[in-house]
Every structure is written in structure tokens, then in C-alpha cells.
Image 1 (cartoon, one colour):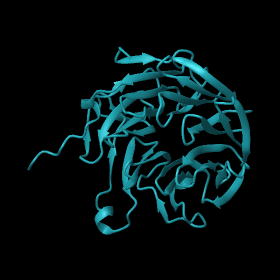
Image 2 (tube, rainbow, N blue to C red):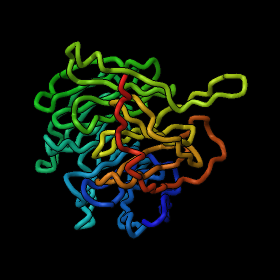
Image 3 (tube, one colour):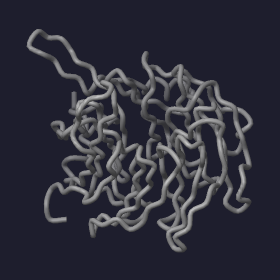
Length: 329
């Protein structure tokens, strides 16, 4: 793309719930509240495929490669779509809405988390649910990393599973942030995860329970605006996305801003990038040269007139994402 930023042609016409690039191609998967799951060729800026749920689609993810995807929604279904044969199928159901779906490479399975307080594992080879795990509350967010599944639920629970033993969590944690969890994303190096909340904060956490690793964890404020009287307006942090090469990450908030951070060195990397409305989801392409930004009102202020749902593609300069070494003392 020749411009620093471009816009997706023909985006969904209702709230965008999730976006994700294919593992090794510039193909973007998009789920939305108008029941649709769409796949776009970003280079050609064209829609290549679409299928529907019976109600709002709340999340989507790719499988091993660009040939298959998965999705879940308010219709309680976990669906898969084969792009080569252009066929969709229902893997199975939860008892309530499916809030999160992830592809777990170590398992070679799709994992779904629901408002029914269950985590389910779906094996395409058996076309069935092969494991159901009970959780402490309804699922809000989920992320996977090497041999782990990290689930964030209501009541600020964070349960961490080793995929080699899904019968019980490896660790049961409570979010270090005081308010409701909005998003969890695992570090690319597999050592921990970032967690964002509705109260303009992000926590940087580590899996290893030893004291040295836990001493490295911290939290920071972001996505806040101060008026002339010094009063803060605090915005939910809806989205997190890690750069695939450098491990730096982007946050997106209900203030309509995207900010790049160097978590290792505790630095903001650039001035915020501004968009028309709330940032619903973020995704880097496989090389990290492009960031997809879903600008889509998330109803944090209830029903109101809002800008149209849009997806932007921002070319990423190395200076935007390369970590910056700490200054020598």
C-alpha cells in the first residue's frame, strides 16, 4: 500500500466484534454484530467470502492456515468455514452465547469460551467437543500461547490452563486491576500476558510463579483525558495486539485512540493515533508491517448517534514498534 493509511472498502454495517489476520497471508477475518463473518483480501481491498450466524457473531479466529476459520456468537454456536470448498458447518453448541474462540496449535483444536461458564475444545478430526471445563464465571476474553490457554471471566478471575491437563487450571488468579477485565493477549514469547480493563489500565503479567518473575509484573494507566480543571475521563481499553517480531504492543480504547507501547522497557513509543470512534479490535499482519484498526462504537455510552463502522490499515514504521533501550543511569 502506497499510503500511510487506507480504509477497507465495504466493511460490516453493524458493530465489529473482532478482526484477525491469517497466520501467513494478508487476509483479514472480521466478525460483527450483524451476524456476519467476512474474509477480506487486504492487498486487493476486496471481500472474498462471507457466512452468517443466526445472531450476532462475537469472535472469530483462523485455524492452522488461511484455509479455515472458526467463529462463535449469540446463537450459542461454534462454527467453522472451509474457504477452499466454500462450506460452513456447526461444530457444536454452548448453553449461552459464545464470547471467545481461539485456535490452540499444540492441541490442533479450536477452543471456545462462553457466557455459560464453560470452556470447550473442538476437534475437527472427531467433529465433536472433546473436552468441557467449568469456569468460575462467564467468559469475557481468551488468549492462547504455546501450551497454555488464558481465560478472563467476570468477577475478575483469570484462569490459566496447561493444554496437557485441562481437568484443572495450572493457576487460578484474580486480576491485579480493580475493575472488569476487557481483553487478554499473551506475549509472543510465551512468558506471560497483558490484561486490560474498563478503567483505562493495562497489567503486564508473567506465568512463572517464582518471586523473580512476579517481581517484574506491573500495571500502567492509559486512554485517559484530562480537562482544564484537571479532572480525568477514563476510557475502557477494548483491544490489545502484540507485534509479531518485536513483542511491543498496541492498545485501543473507547477514546478512539491507538497507542504503541514497549512493555519490556515501560515506554510509550509514539503519540496516539486518533480514529473516529471506539477501537473495538486490533490486529497486526503476519510481518508486522501493517496494523488493522476496527473503529466501531462499542456502546459504552448506550444508544447514541455514532460514526459508521470502519476498518483502517495503517502502515507501521519500524520506529513505531521497535523497542527502545532504557537510558543508562
